[in-house]
Length: 295
Image 1 (spheres, rainbow, N blue to C red):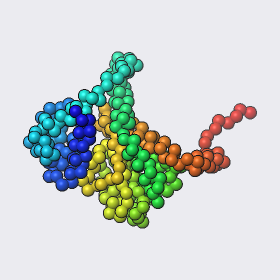
Image 2: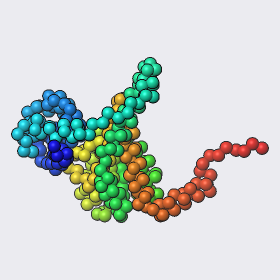
Image 3: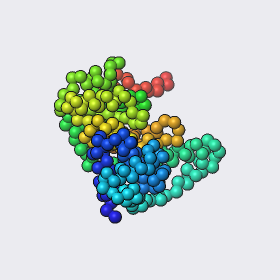
Image 4: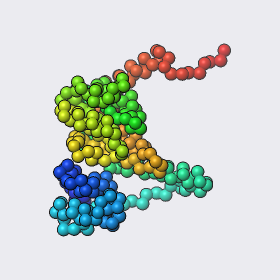
């Protein structure tokens, strides 16, 4: 079985999703976001999880030239089988789990965090990260936007990333909207947006506005398909699966750290010099607390 068949199917779904009917679009988005589940689950389970009918899944497969759903699903199943790896048993995790209710909560959350870090890093394409690094480094200005919980990720990326990218601007700022801050943007600039389900209206509208102004769009998200109207240059897809009611950002943080490392490497001596100058400034202004020596 050709391992690239799954990749080609996903690419075809992404390319055609904007022209699909709402039901086909919903089914296509689920498959793009959950390719491993598609390889495991029977058609009824996939239809239930995607919120569509089994007929919709069959029709989606036929639009891509497959005779039926099983033929459409087979490349996903084969890709899953070829990449399975049981890994090593985490003895310490089992020991935590055996320590009552809180131990079980701890073990489940820890296992989930390690799992999504591993998946988020494993699934990244080195060429995509390299291309994104080049776009960021060569842009006239880089705008970075996110809201709500994702804003914490954007703030950290900005705090560190501006050492390698002096043109990096975190928006919205000064109680504006992101669109306000993009008003003076022009072709040659880049917008990097961070967004996870449920997607913020403000972020999606800022991305659409940036595209209309001719900016190149980059995304860090849990899906390659946030809106059919968005055509990002590159997307870093991360997992935010969680054991509680909110997303777990451990995987996103790991991918952001990789991107920052790439930018710092690209920034070279200039980035190192900028970091040193900030360190000297903070030392000179007593920015960091130190214990007073005893008299």
